[in-house]
Length: 328
Figure 1 (cartoon, rainbow, N blue to C red):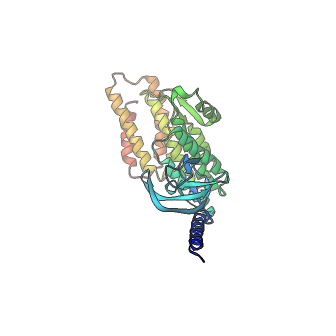
Figure 2 (tube, rainbow, N blue to C red; figure 1 turned 120 degrees about the vertical axis):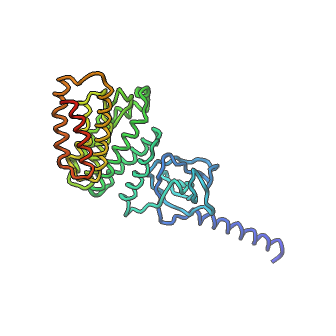
Figure 3 (tube, rainbow, N blue to C red; figure 1 turned 90 degrees about the horizontal axis):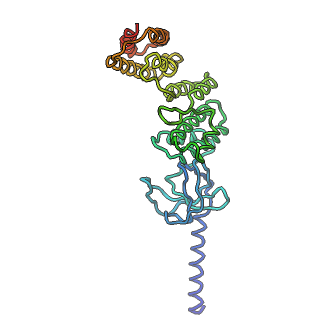
C-alpha cells in the first residue's frame, strides 16, 4: 500500500470512529426521564447556546439517551445534559437538573414528589402555576388507587389556588386569565377586601367528603381549614368566631386528636387574643345584638374544644374565656 492510500485509510477510520461516538450518544438506554420544572428548553446541543428546539412542560416523559461528557451548572444545579427523545419524534438535549429518572412502576410516588416540591415554592408565575395545574389535572386520571388519586386531587386544588393568586384584579378581563377564571369558576371565589382570587374552600371540603374514609382525608381537612375565606369581618367578633368554627374549628371537630390539633389550638389562641386587644382599644361596647349573635358561636367552639386532649387546650380555653366574658 502506497503512502497516500495508507493515509486515506487512516483518515477514513478516524471519520467512522467519530460517527460511532456520535451514535453512542444518540442511542436510547431503555430508560426515561421526567421533566420536573416548567417550560424546560430542549436544545440542539448540550449547552445553553444550543438552538431551542422545543419547550417541555412539567411532567413530560422523555426517553433517555447518553449524557454529555461533562457536567454543567445552571440555576444553582450541577448535572449532565441528556440527549432525549422528544414528543414530536425528534431528539434534543435537556439539562439533567430540570429532570429526574422516571420509573413507570413508581409513577404515583414520582408525581406526588414533583407536586410537593413545586407547591413548596412561595412565588410562582402564572405560566408556571398553570403548567403545574395542567400536569396534575392530567395526572389524576393516571392514578390507580383511591389514596393516590386523593393526594393528586388535593395537589391539583392547591395548584389552582396558587394560579388564582397570580391573577391581578385588573387582569381578570384579559386573556388568558379571563378564560382560565371562566373555566374554573366553580372552584374559585373573588375576595373584594383582598383584591384576589382564592380557591373556594367548598372545593376542599367536597374533596374531603369524597375521601373521608382514607387517611389522606385529614390532610385535606387541614388544607381546607387553612384556606383563605373571602370577605372581611372588620372586627365584628361574632363573625370572627364564626370563621374559626367553619375553618380550624371544623378541622378539630372532625379530628380532635389530629396531627394538627396543637397548631390549630395555637391559631385559635392567637386569634382570640387579637380580638381581646381590639376590644380593649375600642371605645364602643358590644351591643345586645352582637352579644346575641356571638353566644351560639362561642358555644359551638367550646363544644368542639371539649373533645380535644392536646396539652395546649387549657391555655386556649383560658384565652377564649377572657374573650367570651367581654360579650356576656
